Amino acid sequence: MKIKKFNIFIIVFMTAILLITAAGCSNSSTLNSKDLNTDKQVAQSSTKDAAKSVEPNSQSPVKLEKATVTHHTDGDTVGVTLENGQTAKVRLIGVNTPEFTTKHEQYGEQASDYTKSQLYGQTVYLESDAGNTDRYGRLLRYVWISPPREITEDEVRNKMFNAILAYNGYAEQMTVQPNVKYAEYFRKLCADARENNRGLWSVNPNGTTKGDGTSAPSGSTSSNSSTTSSSRKNIQPSGSGKIKGNINSRGEKIYHVPGQAFYDRTSAEEYFNTEAEAQAAGYRRSKR
Image (cartoon, rainbow, N blue to C red; front, side):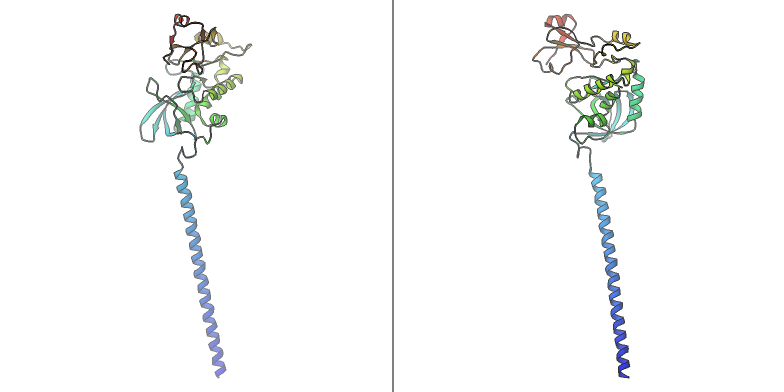
């Protein structure tokens, strides 16, 4: 009888131990599951916070201002709303598209439509140069469609809309001092578009605007070349001498002499031997 009671006691005791052990494992599993879920939530939260904290300038070598394109004027001018709620007109630096609003130039409508289709309603990133606004109060900016990670020809060609216009033949180069940071890129991209007859260059190998321009290669022909050439003076620099005569975007005729601040960076429409010759041709001396 005693042995039977002892066996029952042993069975009950072992059953109790098994139940306690099972309960402990269950609690441990539950706690581990909760810990894993908590860690996962923390990781997801950290990723979201990191994504939110990335600003245009955090990984970009240039200072940028975020904006939204809210209205469209023509190929090289758009209206934007800045992050502070202010609205402004932006004139793209370094390029000039054919006119379409105030007057109609060849390929002006196509350039205007292209800019509208690519930028209207989009978020862009604005970069300034040495000059902030033009005489019309428009912001002078390079318009990036996404922030660059480095400044290379590929980054400029693929991410800066000014350069995209030039590369695809919707604009000619227009260099206006002192905003010359990307002038060499624009020169190369416009030359590539011209050599491959893209955009406006397929309409006229001499271009259709009053940008910096270069004459078409010898042998190039166009049914409209004589008309356009007559409306653009001195596509190839003429004359001799070291004094550079330049016509700026406002149509002002200004000459630069060696040693002046902008002499080396100025493209010449004409060259003169003396300042008197330049003045006789209607040019005035540069103030710097």
